[in-house]
Length: 139
Ligand code: UDP
Image: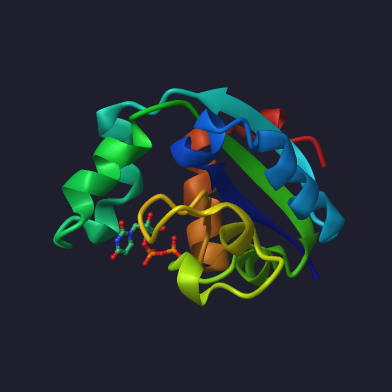
């Protein structure tokens, strides 16, 4: 079933000029980039985006990291895009990520792990709506 998911190329990757290389892995996996924009996230945007992690010990560091440099926000489309992209990203901790995944290839640590991807279809819809209007997504 064709689905959409939300992706962020995080500051550790944009700072190292890896946007194109990350996008190559995404496209080689059969996912289509149907919207994309480079932004500087504000503190308020990052806090809202990661609200579910508000009580976690790493929340402050995570918000600081996500606002430390530009990010690239994206909408990806394809068959089972949510699960497919989670597979392409690899495990949160790059030491546990499978060969060939974005995090295995590029991530620096469990925090600076290069990409975000929605973990469910419901969250994908909420996250996409936080950064894109319908007319900005061209499938
Ligand atoms: N994170 C962190 N320390 C941790 C766990 C997570 O800094 O111990 C950061 C990391 O950037 C991760 C994000 O918080 O990608 C969200 O965590 P989640 O468990 O939702 O992982 P994901 O869905 O991104 O794999």
